Length: 155
Image (cartoon, one colour):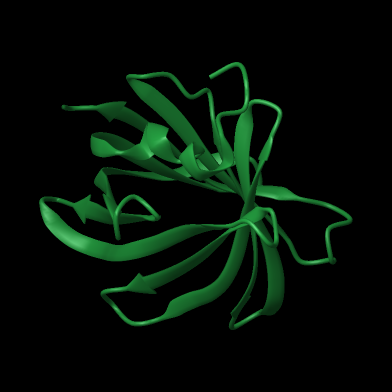
């Protein structure tokens, strides 16, 4: 996707069914790899995108959740909220189109404390995309690769 689509259509590439691979990294080295599925659809007359993500290990669901995405013209950005089927949620994260990719930013917290996440949908074609997430524990001074998803359309 070489040029930026109209703002309200920036997640149109995600609509459909996807098979994917989820890889985690530690210190720049691949740690784990799991199969996953992703599906997305328009809701509320095309004003929102709802997508479901499911991660498997040995055929069993180990993580699943849904994201709601809506374009907010007044803010010129996407507002997103994620709910996990295992508990937990990320209510305040935001996305904007940057050149040839969608970038999403969120502030998270875990047992080690607060950190920033930067998520990108990139290498977007009609049949595939790559999703990656980087994390920073020093307010964005340095970033480390956390995970990558490589998705391929199944419909």
